[in-house]
Amino acid sequence: DSGVTQTPKHLITATGQRVTLRCSPRSGDLSVYWYQQSLDQGLQFLIQYYNGEERAKGNILERFSAQQFPDLHSELNLSSLELGDSALYFCASSAEGQRAPNEQFFGPGTRLTVL
Amino acid sequence: DAKTTQPNSMESNEEEPVHLPCNHSTISGTDYIHWYRQLPSQGPEYVIHGLTSNVNNRMASLAIAEDRKSSTLILHRATLRDAAVYYCILRVYNTDKLIFGTGTRLQVFP
Image (cartoon, rainbow over all chains, first blue to last red; front, side):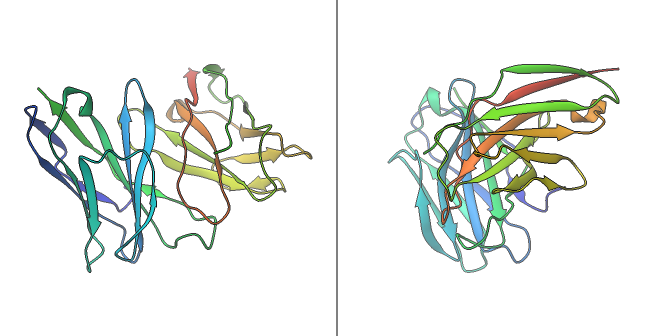
């Protein structure tokens, strides 16, 4: 158990819909990261937040957005869903940002299926 | 982002050492070398990282070539639980994002 929790575990929805994935980082970790893992693209970095502020952006689509709240939990919002958005979405957390080669702890993931 | 090259798959027998190679010929002087692994149906987990010197921890050892253009993850005695996809990642100094490649799928046979 990494200490990172993600809800829900599974999500099935239809094209065009909007969903919200939630992540609670390890206690005390200030950085939260979102990754997408699909069969054809592998594991891709989407976005990082550090203490409530966006820190780094990867291959995140404009239809996707994220935020980190004052209690440090994070949400990833996916809208206008397409079949190709079906994937595993992982959240990770780490203690610091950019100042040390820090270990990232990954949650168990949310499996999104778009029908 | 600098790229890593790993074999697609490797096999080992239980209780034997495993050497997982990684080439990163375009590494810059400040890139850290990280290894993560992903067990079936789980999120990735940190294994080890290094910059220039060889590193040991309870899970594995990391041997880094003198020119830093390659590295090897060493599992001293493979167990069935070590069957996973192992990712070698270069992390750019002063950033935290991990750029995963395709990794090496390790199979361990009893």
